[in-house]
Length: 137
Image (cartoon, helix red, strand yellow):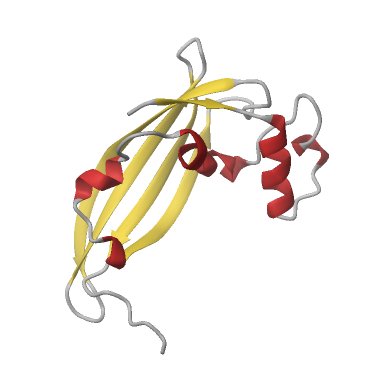
């Protein structure tokens, strides 16, 4: 389930442009990552089953509930390769305002450098609603 995450200068620049950032720290040979850049790791380099698949949530009813990032030193930069290890965290349920039970889960992804030191942690919350959202006609 773990995967290598090579931090590429061009991808940092693309991400910064897409988020309309003009911060010079996100360009150049030693460009640092924008904090939310970690979200792209699984999209481009992840393989196999993500912990969310283990939840059995019905995808038509899944919402993104939020992201949290914690860094344990300077931000990662271009040229580094991190190992990303996602896992399931806590799970809980609560009654929805429109009736039915909503299920929540937290997915925790640790990012470690080649020496095994924890560089960053990402915590993603996913929500399965009790009913599928209504589609506009």
